[in-house]
Amino acid sequence: MDSALTHLSCTACGAEFAADELHSTCSSCGGVLAACYDLERVRRTFHPDRLDERPWNLWRYAELLPVRQMRFRLTLGEGGTPLLTAERLARQLGLRQLWLKDESRNPTGSFKARGLAVAVSRAVELGAQAVALPSAGNAAAALSAYAARAGIPAYVFVPADTPRTILAECLAYGAQVYRVRGLITDCGRLVRRLAAERGWVDLSTLREPYRAEGKKTMGIELIEQLGWRVPDVIVYPTGGGTGIVGMWKAFSELEMLGLLGPERPRLVLVQPEGCAPLVHAFHEGRSSAAPWDHATTVAPGLRVPMTIGDRLVLEAVRRSGGTAVAVSDAALLAGVRLLASTEGVLVSPEAGATLAAILALRESGWLSPADEVVLFLTGNGLKHPELLPDADHCPVLDPDAPEFMTQDSRAC
Ligand SMILES: *Cc1c(COP(=O)(O)O)cnc(C)c1O
Ligand SMILES: [Zn+2]
Image (cartoon, rainbow, N blue to C red; front, top):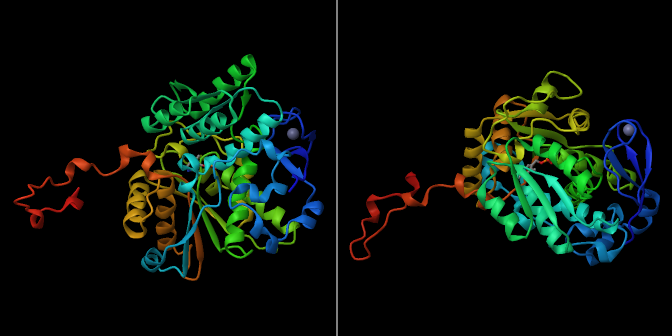
């Protein structure tokens, strides 16, 4: 399973770059770089009926990933997440088929593990001695874990109000954690300056080509789990949009490998009302998004006021025949509770937004009863104890005189 990586290509101007040296964005236009593969060669080794022998993690798709040597492929068991049916919710919503892609099972509790497993592996293969990134929290945790696994230092920069559980997680992995007064975009400016000064490799999302490659595996894996066909609709909670960019790339690579036809799932981009730059740009018919002022939401991973991937994300959603939805914080938190109490899956607030979005899209009629829908549940609810019900509300019983019939702990 050799990587079939050939070169990097600028998604904006088409300039080409050698793959086996470190690059960030395009040196001539600043555009996002994409990894390109010799798909003819992959066609010869990648057969769906011969995948059984391969590990059930993202390195299963090693030909379509950039890491050349096996010994650099870091793994903590990322990818290979379950695709769960949600029959009770589907009935409630009046949908033929509803699937939950449970990305909360990834190492460090979010799908960010996929991007960083690949990006850290590749950075180390190309000689990185230290890695850094700006993050709303989950990417920082994933970077910290994979850097520990690789035995190199990690420097993470997060907004000062990032949930404490996630900061503690990064510290436990031995990362240097810096809290910045500002948002992820401010953290990004700081990382770019410090990384250049100190020789760290900057793994900011879409400012290097390989995190998107890791996220791409969400798309390949979903198609494999469905038996090499697409669902009607994919719903994705969107911050920087790397997941959408990655999955869209996966579908075209699978088509070039002859494993998929020209059909595509309609992509639904979900953002919170308090930070919805891509949703606004989509509905205003613009091809790029204006930076969002005063971004505020309880879903940290979606508090991304601007992204270098805006054009790519908007183009993918439009070409898929999809749409964009903004949901309130109250609605996404209600989505978290409904998923947990109806299907037994406890997700992060970002993931709760996907359920809020399909409730709205059923109501508006955009989703029809015949649609087969996949929700990407990107993060684990246990990372956000501050948003979970307050355990102090559980009744405390006297074991000899329990008055449990009169008390309902669910009232809280
Ligand atoms: C980062 C993050 C997102 C947003 O993902 P992008 O691919 O950057 O748009 C969604 N959910 C969670 C839990 C995240 O950590
Ligand atoms: Zn360019």
